[in-house]
Image (cartoon, rainbow, N blue to C red; front, side, top):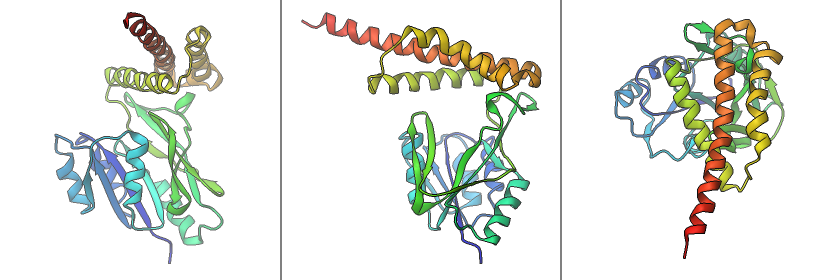
Length: 259
């Protein structure tokens, strides 16, 4: 018999997307949802798919993922975001791997493919966007720097070919709002860690992000979608370092005003 898998999902106010996410996990041995006190129909929808529904105040991506991981009953963890879906091909590939036996691997990574404004993105920084989301509980946990969490495991990892599907942004405003929110979190993290603001970061990193996504990784092959993604990526980089500059300036000004 194959080893059992616990699917772990964190969410907040995702009534439009959570059903698709949870339905794609029906083949797992249990589904655990950690909700951050949604005010829409998300809790009711989640309870249709699992009895293991919990709520906790938002602690950040890293702490929230580790919290839901610790609730899992089975030896393997599969992380899925509420706006993601396990494709049928990925489900079949995972089950085939587990039927053959997982040794010596302690983790599996696979590409993530984004559906953006009516089109699947196949190039640029968004694809293949490989993520390690399936791992042995005893050998891995979530680490990283907010808001960018990553699973770290101790042992060999196998790469699968089929994708998880990501229905990321509702529209351009949603994309811009997320870029603005994440740049604020990233700047705050750098400030707390005492990473100094450098003018070179502000000048060079935005055009580098654009060139990397649009030219070096062929984002231009995705047409206008690829151009917009590269421009917003550059803006997010600019905003992050501009906000770090602002935080340092306010901090210095505050201490100059102290008696």
